[in-house]
Image 1: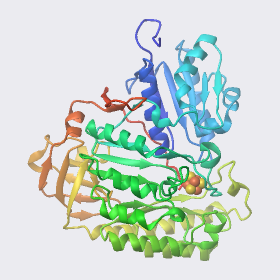
Image 2: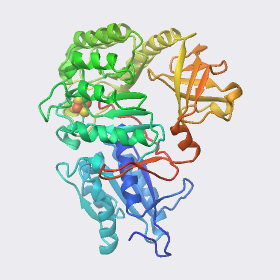
Image 3: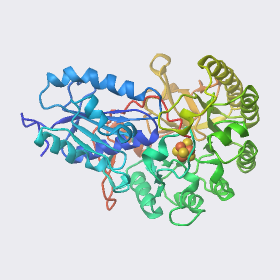
Image 4: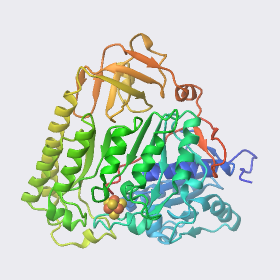
Length: 499
Ligand code: SF4
């Protein structure tokens, strides 16, 4: 039994770094710990009984940051007997036993393949008064079979696959997350249904490469079929997915997006570079022409589609001409948003030891030009929506200035961020509700709607948000999700440039 000496349940805190995979894994870590009797520490609690770091290895200085944070906790732990520190995620998978050698006050190190062992490892470390390090080379159970404490009442992540069979030279994912493992469509759809039954309106299907979904069970059209099957789920209003890979993108997916009413017309498709030479060096086996060809087909089928991307600038060997090609593709692609990254070495990746590493000032200068180009395009694309009506799913934490401006915020169906005035409905609109409003102003990264809303629909997700409840999906998906305690969302730091 996991209780503190005083008899009260032990408290926990999860600190999340990195990409959506990690944010969703943290939901599982929380679900597992709560199933084992732990309760989430209050946000202001500086001394939780257990602190779990869910780490990311994609940034060059990720380890410095981890050891810095562990160093800060050392005196806290010394003053708080019984406190435990656990380190999981990609950096743990990479550094393994080094973590307890460098920071011997860490109690548990667990990898990306054995999240489910965390409660047992914590118990064992306490019982034996010694650190437990357990890293597996391959997946024990598909992580979605673990209990999950969801962070949102209205939107949920659903994993369709983990791992990746590609070998992009800048990416550490394949060596840390292993080969692609596909989850059975029936299990995915059960989880989606369970979420919808608890009031969730929007589901994002998650995989390192959703377009290769089905490779394991021999159906290359499995992803399009999965999208269409989501279309049959009553109450599911929005389906999104991340991330597709241009190499494996097939036309049936475009048709499924266009023909399935609840699939959103938004596509986040990583470009990484517009130069074919750089794509070759990155071992990304599509070329810019193919990439632009997919965009063209998507726009032909869905003229209102918002297309977003990831771009890395300053990859080893990138010339000024290569970079100019990236700018060309940005202009041709007419993205509604782009996540831009300066290339930085990720230890353990082939690109880290390539010739032609560029000086920081060259990368910085290109990066600034790229951002200026992206913003010009995204602003022009956003301006096209002024005067249009958008359907907004009201969100929590999307509008930093909302309190000051009296607006609320959320995402339009195409994924754009909308800050809207609440008019006479102030105080009655809840996160998870749906609002229709007219766009009055466009900025490069968001839209404003400053007239009174045209319509407001109260939803079950809004009721749950008002009651402070979040869905939990149980470990084995036999029943409906139960309703848990209020969420304190993890603070994802940085982003995964893994696509
Ligand atoms: S960047 Fe994406 S597709 Fe490439 S290896 Fe990494 S996870 Fe796989």
